[in-house]
Image (tube, rainbow, N blue to C red):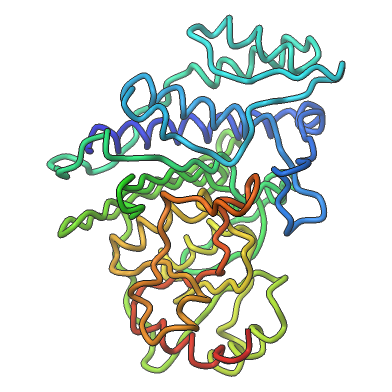
Length: 374
């Protein structure tokens, strides 16, 4: 498991490099953006985007993990279809080839013969990042790769990635939107139970290097398996007694906003973009809970940050199941079973909404004012 964690940290940094390369070429980036259609369209957005960066990152992670852990190859799933349409209307299946040259040739066919852009992307895909600093020595978890599956969200908060607004982040403060909301999410779950047991989050646009002007990233990771709970983040100190802060989507239902404004007070109700970023805000202690009443998130959004929250003593539960029961224990999200009655991406939606929390005592406080209103 320590080997797998080290590999995921490395491929997440490679993914972050690809995301940064794609943003550096603005005309190229505009060229790459395509709309999702049919069963793959996420209904929440009027216009949801699929970028070549998304597909390339997902396939790169699938390739690198599959090479090192072949027994996991058929259980590495992601948000994106790896079919891409070029300007000639040809459908190209994007995969990572054995050599940089072959990958560049394949990408050139997607990019209508733009060999410069294709070579730039291929180099980022095949380049090993500088070593990732993570204290994983001595981490032993009694699980084998054959027991595990992976969910990848190549670039969560795609809309923020495309818009590209830059923010200078400050310690201890939540910034509601911008490039920093775009995250690479890699979550590992137990195939047998669906429990999230490992998560890696990479924030490719954490800060800009004042010397060179290039973006630098930050990574977060956690492992939660039985009595083993280890996380790169420390458990945040408890806030003032009685105080509770929540982060929501700005498009959350008015009834939820009103109920939580009454509970938290208007100053403690915050809004932010990206499901992964909102859960990261809970992980970092910038908010106590993240509440979502609709089914607009998916297993690839929540699996990685859920594992980090579990490592810190928290979790992610199904909101509607919590509203129907007295305890949130049986409402924890799992990641192994699709909704067979649904099609496309909806098979893997978190249909009942969710509550992400650091402390289980917070669930009942959140649920009480929402009962009977959803």
